[in-house]
Amino acid sequence: MAGAGLLSLGYGTWLALQPAAPPTLAAASSPNTPAPGAPAGDVVSPGTVSLTADAPTATEQAKSTAACPGCDIVLVTVCSLRRDHVGLYGEIEGLTPALDELAEGGYAFSRAYAASNFTLAGLAATLTGRFGSSTGVTGWDKGLGADVALLPEILGFYGYETGAFTIDAPSGFRPDYGLHRGFQRMEVFAAPRDTPDGRFQPGEIGPGGASAGPVVEWLEARTGDRPSFAMSPTIFLGNIDLETVNIVFNSPNPISSFS
Image 1 (cartoon, one colour):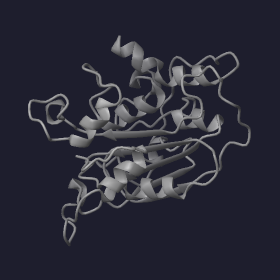
Image 2 (spheres, one colour; image 1 turned 45 degrees about the vertical axis):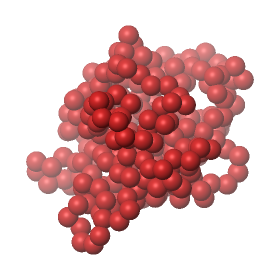
Image 3 (cartoon, helix red, strand yellow; image 1 turned 120 degrees about the horizontal axis):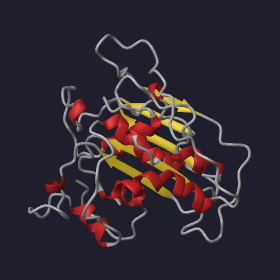
Image 4 (tube, one colour; image 1 turned 90 degrees about the vertical axis):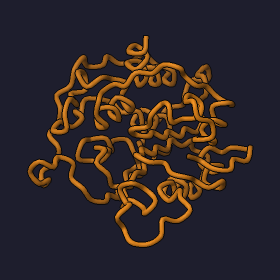
């Protein structure tokens, strides 16, 4: 059941929004080779990225019968997060108070299965609803094929503004692997001091939450009435202050911290 749910994620989103008959999706994809330039033995090319792309010129309205037509979407992924270190699931309360509070007003799942055992394939599956055996992403030397539709591409077709923001870390979430497609704004920025990847930088750690800054700024700067899809893949979310949580999640309830 979990595998079927994963496979249907991207396709189900497309089907729920579009008014016409669904397209025929390829059963398998030919993987792309990551962009050259990475040193031998270091497939993920480090460095910051700042990309801007035009929104699709031809768009359609979502079906009025869709579950939530035109709703804003915020997708935050946390790599290497242990289940027993989330207050909602673990034996120790208070480790993740903001996540726990969000779960109280939403849905939480007691069972979930990873699509793969490494970050790149997991993120590719999240954005496509397909396993690596279908997308071609089966190793760090294989990027996402151009014939595989990504969630931000689909949402852009329905008028969404799309943005992705993450720190410069070995996650594979970068143009080298094709995961930028469909994002009208993408930033891969230097790891802040309050994250594990920035822990050797000089200076004080600070109050936390610096990694959420770019996505918050993007959301605040948006104008017009187009719905938005914001994605923030992260290895460490850190402690985010009240203002950040309320902006990102549009929460009317006060939240003291985000772990």
